[in-house]
Amino acid sequence: MSDTPLRLHAVVHGYVQGVNFRASTQREAASLNLTGWVRNRWDGTVETVAEGPRSAIEHFERYLHRGPMAADVDRVDVTYSEATGEFSGFHIRY
Image (cartoon, rainbow, N blue to C red):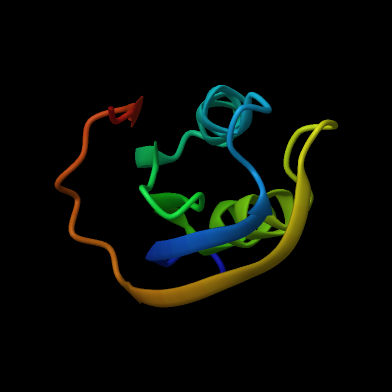
């Protein structure tokens, strides 16, 4: 059951733009074989959607609470749902 495909939607708050957050998130997701995307939002947050096995998604969520070394994450708002399988790869959205 731990490999049940899952979808995570997260908004990361704090000092998370201009600190390589998107690129490092993309690398982390790729290393976990997750699909989805990450982008900066107008309000200074970073938003991401990722799909993959539950264990990998849980690891990814823990990463989002840390981020890259220069980031200062205040909080992460996360929702889970069923994976849709709509993505191929993990991309930075602009």
